Length: 362
Image (cartoon, rainbow, N blue to C red; front, top):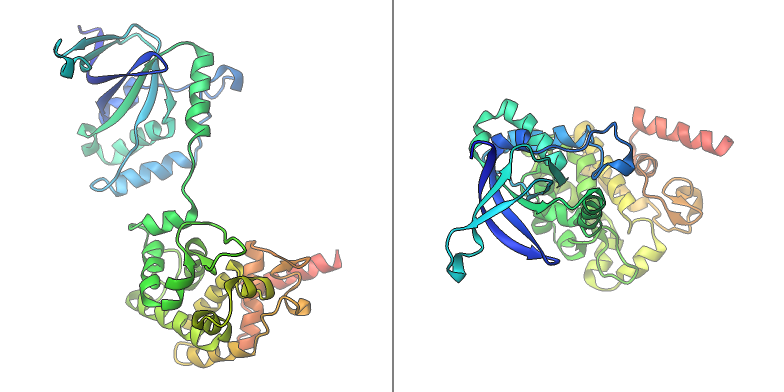
């Protein structure tokens, strides 16, 4: 049987056709599985062209977390004769056995080509991964049309989790960890942060999404949540508590004398872009005003958050009375806050102001 691959397998049936689930060592994945040549026109391929950005990202994940990673199953089609021998004729074992695949068969990945390429890259730096395994679902190849349909079906029914849910469940990313810790350390965020959605419905009681809070913390604490060293967590918690103490809008919402929907409708404060602007402000204050940052934060009491104050917010965080969530809007909003608390604009802030002036004169 030297001209065959032989795998322990479990047999199943979908749409009247058998398929098989096997376990394959990671070291064998690059040599067993192939994917379509990117030079082929799209109508002759059964999968997308590899993204040069995604492969190193997944490879780095595998190499960095070699003792704590997870990979979902690959899905492949085989254009050769598949032979399955049950382990026993007994009913309970008829679908457990050995699957043999001719070595000269073309084994095409319908789903998982980026994982396959990333495994090959990760093995170069982490060769100890070669004896670990990945599950592969194998179907008999029924032609290009069927392979293309399999790719379409697998991907159109796949729904990416929301950004907020990714933050909630990510215990490895330091910014996600910090943002999740804030939920238990700052009562206001615990009560008014949506942990699942990426946008807030008009009548929702939540004010911000967890993904927005993470972005705000990135401006505040840096992408690795270590801008202030060992004191980062302590300072971030202290900053957000200080902000709460000077925002009567947050306090009235917390006390139940104001509704989230009213705050969202009437103020810019109730939107993620301003939460991020507060994060930008905090990053500067904690870095540049280490002893007096609380005094500066107290001056936020003077800011008018009303959406009716078009002279202050229009063109910055609003466009035609609609909120603008772009990165430039975050900086333009932060500029308003910096001026209010007595900070001069930094290079990033001045660049944002120049771009605003260019738009106004265009």
